[in-house]
Image (tube, rainbow, N blue to C red; front, side):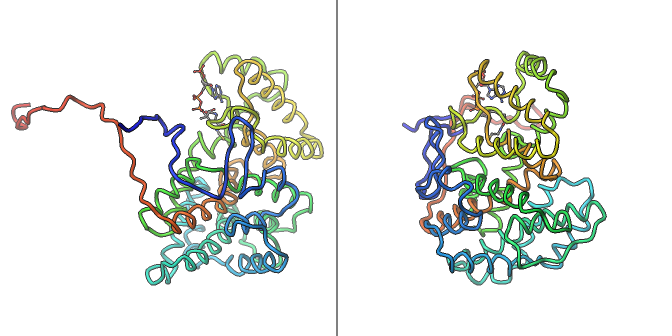
Length: 375
Ligand SMILES: CC(C)(COP(=O)(O)OP(=O)(O)OC[C@H]1O[C@@H](n2cnc3c(N)ncnc32)[C@H](O)[C@@H]1OP(=O)(O)O)[C@@H](O)C(=O)NCCC(=O)NCCS
C-alpha cells in the first residue's frame, strides 16, 4: 500500500551526493562540506566546481572554469532583441525564464548531441548567461545602454558591473559572492525537484532550468525575499513592528522570510546573511531595516517558535547592495542555477523517470453517462 504525504513531505524521492538539508540540526551540506566551512572561504565559482565535480578545484581548474564561464557570457542576438522588446512592466523573473527557454532554440548542438559532456558544456553556458540576462533586462527597461561583456571579472563582480554600468566596490563583490555561495544548492526544494522531474523525461537541460525558474518564482519559494522588503516598507519604522506582526498573526497571514518546511531550528545560512545585512545597513545608514528585522525575528521565535529563513536577511543584503526588489528572485536564480544544473547532470547520469501516484478522492466510480440533451 503506497503512503500518502501531502506536498511530498518526508518522502525521499531520489539519492543525491550534492546537498543535504538537516532540518533538526540546522545543517546545510554541500558535497560533504558544512556550509559554515565554505561561506566566506570559497568563491561562488569554487562552489560551482564542487557541485559539478564533487570536489573543490585546484587553482588551475578554477582558472579554467572561470575562463569557460567568461567565454560563454555573450547572448545570442535574438535573445538580446527579446530582452530589449520585453514590456518594461514584465517581471524580471519571467523574462529570465523565457530567455533561458530561448537559449535552447539557439543551441545548434541540442538535437545532435545529448551526451553528458555536451550537457556539462550547456551547464556552463546557461550559468554564464543567466546573470547577463537579468542585468541586461534591468538596464533595457530603464532605457539604459547594455554594457559590453567583460571577461576579466568573476561572476558576482560581472553581474554588478553590468547592472550598474560601472566597476563595483570590493565590498559589494565580496558580499554578493557570499550570498551566491549560500544560495547555490539546497537539497530537494521545489525548484530543484522541478528541474529533476523535467530532465527525467529526457527532455533537454534548457527545459529543465526553465521549469526550475518558473517554480522558484512563487512567493512560497524564491519570491519570499521580495515579500520581506515589501513587509519592511509597509512597517516603515521599528516602533510599528509589534502591532504589524500581531495583526498579521491574528489574521492568520504569513510573515515573509519566517519559517521553513525542513529547518525546524535556525537556517544555517541566516547568520551569515544577518552579519552582512548588519554591516551593510549600518554602512549605508539604514540601520532601521535591521532593527525592524531583528524585532520581527524575535517575536516570531517567541510567539510561534519559528525562525528566520534565508530570505529574511538576504532581502536586506540585496537591498543594501542597491539591487532592485524585483531582481531579488532572479539573483537567487542566478546562484541556484549552480545547484539546478548539478542536479540535472546527476539525474542524467543515473536516470529514472519520476512518476508518483495520486490518491483519488473524486466521485464514487460507477457514474453512468447521460447524453448532453438529458443532463
Ligand atoms: C516556508 C513555509 C511555506 C513552510 O511552511 P510549512 O512547513 O508548510 O509550515 P506550515 O504551513 O505547516 O505551518 C506550520 C505553522 O506555522 C505557521 N507559520 C509557518 N510559517 C509562518 C509564517 N511565515 N508566518 C506566520 N505563521 C507561519 C502556520 O500558520 C502554522 O501554524 P498553525 O499550526 O497555527 O496553523 C512557511 O513557513 C511560509 O509560508 N513562510 C513564509 C514564506 C517564506 O518565507 N518562504 C521562503 C522559504 S525559504
